[in-house]
Image (cartoon, rainbow, N blue to C red; front, side, top):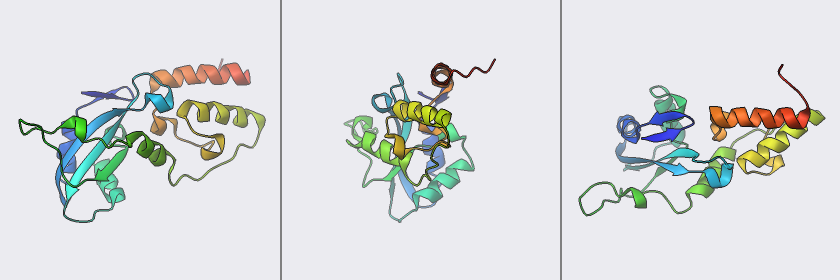
Length: 174
C-alpha cells in the first residue's frame, strides 16, 4: 500500500487496469518519494512502467485510466520501458524499475503543457510566490490557477498552506 495525497493505493490495482489497455503486455506501478522537491514529508506519487510492442500515446493511457480509476490512482509518470526487471525469485525487482532520473521526470511532468496565468494583483503575487516555493519551481514556471492537488498537496499540507497564505496576505476566512 502507498499513501497518495491521503488515499491508500494498492499498486497492483493500478497494474491490473493498465494491463487492460490495448497493447500493454506487462506493467509495474511503484510509489516514489517527491518530498525533496515539494518539501512535504512522506509525499508520494505513482510511477508506471509498461512494456508494449506497439507505440501507445501516453495521453490515451491516461484517458483510459481516468475512465476507470479515481484521479489519485492515476500514475503521474507513465513510461514505456524495454522490460520489467525481475529478481532471483522471478518477481518484479521494484528497486530497479524506477529510473534514476524519476525526480527530474516528476518536475517536467508537473510543469509540462501548462498555460501560465500571471498574477494580476499583489495578493495573487504573494500566493504565487508561496506556491512556487512549496512545489519547488521558479515563480515564472507556475500559474495562479495551478491545481494544488495535482502538484502533490494533500488535505494536511493544504491546511498548513492556507495558514501560510492567511499569515502572508493578512486575509482571514473568518
